Image 1 (cartoon, rainbow, N blue to C red):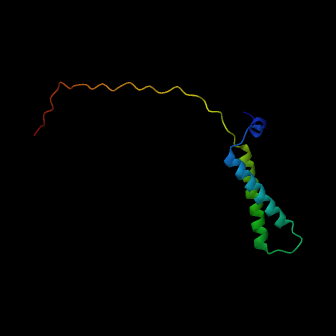
Image 2 (cartoon, one colour):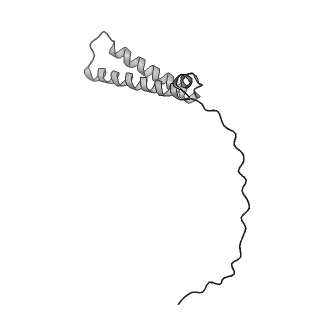
Image 3 (cartoon, helix red, strand yellow):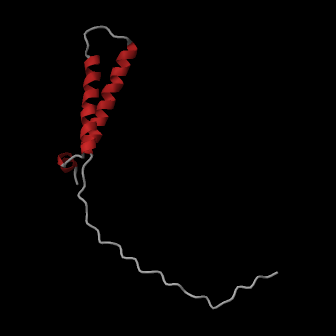
Amino acid sequence: MNLVQRMQAPTPILFRILRTAGIALASAGAALLAAPAALPAGLLALAGYLTVAGTVMTAVSQATVETPKIPQEPIVQEPVKKVKSTKKVVDNV
């Protein structure tokens, strides 16, 4: 499966939710970084981390795909045969 096929394949529901959350985090971080008002350095650093985390979360969630389930043959287990021992165990004293 190449990259284009992977990106176009269906995404599981959990990762769709995570993708949306990642987009929201990246958007919030970008909005704080682009704010016209002077913000404290700590808040700007947090905004940068939010942007990176949201972008990575979105990319990973988008790249996760559902794989088709391959039907497997049932495992047939043969019954265990009990073997009688003909040797007697003798303790050495």
